[in-house]
Image (cartoon, rainbow, N blue to C red; front, side, top):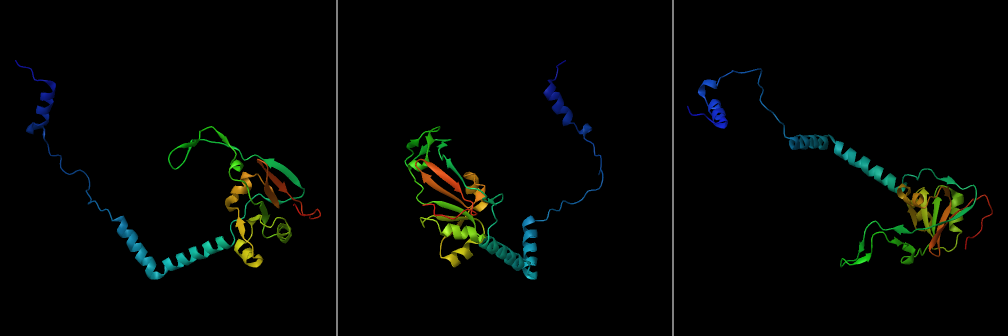
Length: 211
């Protein structure tokens, strides 16, 4: 007697009419209804536009943006200096990747230690201050040279620019004060050779020019 191979036997059994049974309907069947998400969003937007919600949201966002521009979020953790302090800061960095020019030629190799001051000197001192403190503002405007960049950590830069006719910057997110590890104000950063000098000033002392 000829033996059927296992694959042939399985195929024959699965195709046999005798094994095909109708078990009827099991449980309750429901039609699949999937509402179009884009249509829902469009309908919601149309409703919001009709009742004025979109205009109110836009106005709220506009007011919030203007308020944030006029008075950015203050840098946390800074205090007014109670004693004078001076230290040096080495800006040298170790490259984490090769630096290439526009022609893909290697300028610096990964692992090279680079001091940015060797190629881009700090031409103007940086003065960090609280713009809501009149004493710090008075001190900052008394410093020489007058080309120092005034960087607020608190206050209203646009209002001060209009009132003082001088450009103000703002240390958004405290990036600069964190980088230079500045904890007390007012503070000044200027260049000394291949290093940066960081000074914090106690305004209770007799004010003097830092020239």
